[in-house]
Amino acid sequence: MIKILVYVAIILAVFAIGYLVKVYELAANLKGKKQHEVTDSDNRMMGKIMLTFLFVFFAFVIWNLVEYVPKMLPESASEHGVGLDWLFNFNMAILFFVFTITHIFLFYFAYKYYGRTGNTATYFPHNNKLEMIWTVIPAIVLAVIIIFGLKAWNKITAPASKDAIIIQLYSKQFDWTARYAGKDNELGDSNYKLITGENPLGMDDTDKKGDDDIIVRNEFHIPLGKEVEFKLNSRDVIHSAYMPHFRAQMNCVPGMTTMMHFTPIITTAQMREKIGNPKFDYILLCNKICGVSHYNMQMTIVVDTEADYNAWLKTQKTHKSAGAAAEAKPVAANQ
Image 1 (cartoon, one colour):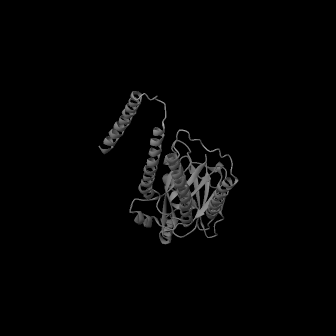
Image 2: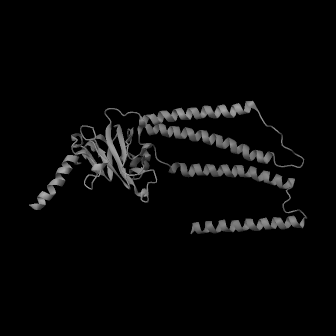
Image 3: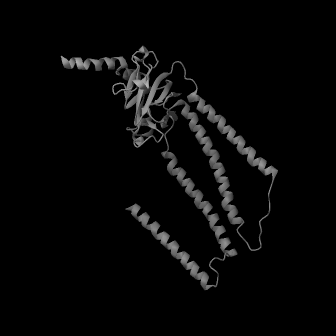
């Protein structure tokens, strides 16, 4: 009901403004004033309106910040994400400073220098000092942002440590599959030519490194405080592995392997407690528009304590044991 009243009020306000404009035009005609003639009085009034709009505009900006900033993502759940959040806030502080200064000058100058009869603009074609200032200062600021950005990027794209847990994230229209490297921490070879309904990742069974690999769908688990290296692949089109709560994203490109790594620092249970939402889950999304069901391409991520992670890992079947179980089913049926 309140929304309907708001819409009605907006519509009535539009009509009221329209009628006020007509009244103004009629009053101008009665005074013998040409409809399109702009007087000093009109310019003065528009200058005052621009100055008033300056305060209304910034009140609206502040309201947006108060209303919507708390609805952004919660604190970063990865080690490198803390630095990325700082970099994001640093960028926003610079943008907001420039935004504020330029808009104050924009509206204030519109008020101060409104058109007056007989006034002419000063011809000012060139000033080396000003050009040097507005070239050098932005260049320095951008250089600082780029340097910080490269450092943050290198944290997740540089080679991972030897102790990192290796997980392959395999994308296709329209789902994800995760494959753990197993006890040897090495992924077995795979080939797209070997893909079948029973072997969706195209794993090469002649490569014994893949015997202890663990394949999971729907959700995958990672341990708290342990570095995780992700090897990303795609079967069909370009997808993008996006884990917003960990501030991590990387494209999955057909025909090649891309990589990134991070260390989770907040378990799922801890984050649920922090934000007061017992149903909260970390998620893996596709951040490329990869087809009609792109919106549904997601996978749950669970961050466990190390003990819980190891307990969960023990309940998962290896590629070899899963294959043996699949081969045994027809035999049991014949008996």
